Image (cartoon, rainbow, N blue to C red):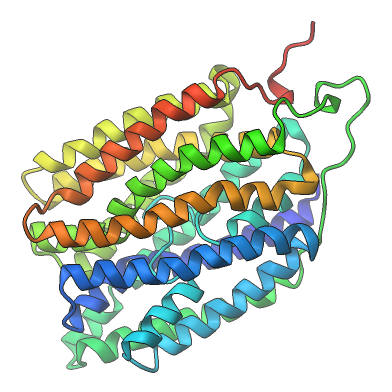
Length: 407
């Protein structure tokens, strides 16, 4: 186990999650403050998502062929550039370009720990290569824990525009300060990325279960993950980018209240990540993913009937806590059944359909919100529910090497 490499991977995730957390809350509200309608907000997020999807493809090939450390460093520079541009201008095409290249406002939502976006296909193989198979899920849970805790602090920063507005600042200049802060933290992320070493999985002992060939071919794995992730992307597209706007419209809350809510949700979601490895040992990876996600969706649906902001926030926090239990198992499983040589491409091309479909939902959801306000919640439950079912059907008979019992 490469503890030094894990330290720097954790550090980069913490810095990225810190900025992602407050940008996810602030970016839709920044657009609303600029006079954007729900429909226009949805289309802005969709167009920026096109650029993000292209980056995912580039990272998939670049990670395997040029080095995963290299592409993480370049993604850090793009985050610096995107946030800096947003702090400087409100011109619509610049906003779309900057948010797409920098991944602004597309961080996976509260409690995700930063497990989203183009950096994912480069980061995951580096994590898997820095640890032995028996500890992989534990490490994936720990890095998500680090990300969530950093995200909790970052969510509080999303209240900065409200504080500045109370002191006489205009809303747009106040948000520009926030984007400037994101550029500065992203620069620190670039510096920390320089210390990461390129590592690959060590060859296992010949007689160990891990020495066996992957239980599924790379093409089969990509195809099954792509289909299930496409459904998940449709659901996330309804939920992630539009959720802060839904809270704003449904309960008339602003950035200060949402910043506090997202910080609390991050804290609630943190501890389950540390218990994910133990649950996976009991249930197995695929069963852990399907059970926890199903319970999380039930909590998400309850938000539709929440009488006030507090109850809606509580339901969402419970949903994210269940999600936290299953996410490390899902990530570790994908790496466990992948050939190390193709891990970045497998991660990228299995995630690409999610990126593409998540572009569609904001535009559709934003258009319908003016006539059916709960469309982000209902749309997310429908498509994420389909994801749970198809994920079980696709992988219930695929066992990662470390879960195979000795005969």
